[in-house]
Length: 234
Image (cartoon, rainbow, N blue to C red; front, side, top):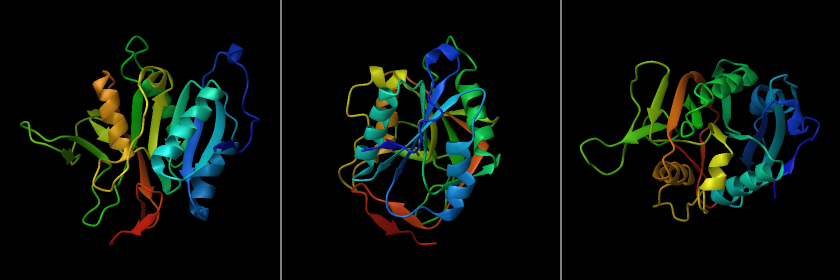
């Protein structure tokens, strides 16, 4: 089950600032570079503009881990959940708290628009051939599948799916979407992140990618649906 690393940042809603659950599924050891550059700043730096609740969930499978993190965020009455994977570090801006603030400001740029409540940073996908960005649009002309993001105009773009390695989500979404929120039982199925975004799209939610928040992947290990790892060709 997920457990908070510390509860010092939890305060009641009367202070008028949002509460953000910083959520990471994990298995095995943590990369020291991730700990220094991503975990420590996000989990232990106090911010004036938000309360942060650091939570982690050991991977049984990715859908189970992500679901348990959402349950934990709901238990703490968080306003947002920020999925940040343990193999990602921020390239621009290098301070993850600055990046989080940028994503938060954009997800609230139009408070009247209730369907623009999911936003992701931009990072490279792990795969055997090439390193496309972890953002995809539906294939054109009615074709099946998705086309990887290759180019874009502006820095705030709508996409259909991304990875969940750096994604800020309004918690009200999980109060509307039916469970399961995440599903991935077979390597031949779409992964749990694709499943979630397809479900959210079905209920009218949009996904935006903010390309000024850039991350890089650490190592060449890729997690599979059952929580085990495979080595990707470099």
